Length: 177
Image (cartoon, rainbow, N blue to C red; front, side):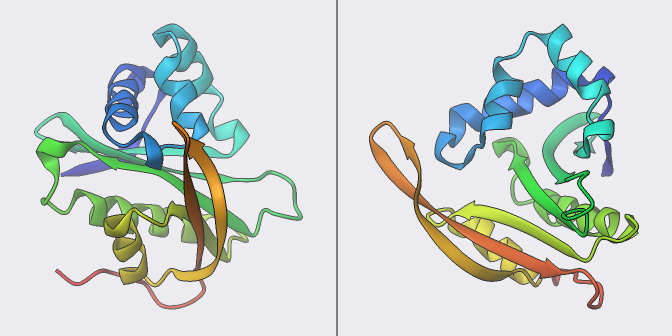
């Protein structure tokens, strides 16, 4: 299992996973993933070249040369908000589920966030109906900061978002197993 930052040369595999997520669980997919899935491949590759300069860090988990899942984090460049990162875009392809890919991507993102100078917190939002994701985040020490009711409307159905936060100054969180 190899986890690494995705580069513009990974645009095709990244887009493939984003499209799979959008098809599989559209109620759990955010707007940037929708843009990435809908982009023409050269456009996505070009955008990915600028991601680091924009504070966007996508990661991929590779098993036997195949991208099994992705996860990203963003850091606002404004000094008022640069003390925290935002985790988003965690998706594991169905064929690779149950193989600890999500756990390894979470561990990698947390370690990466801790290595960024001045970062103290990781935040994320999760659709409240996404129980596996909520459980995963809680196992890593994320705590609920509140719920935004009816944060998203998809096909006439409303979904609530739970905001969660992890204090990165605490000890290293690793999920058992």
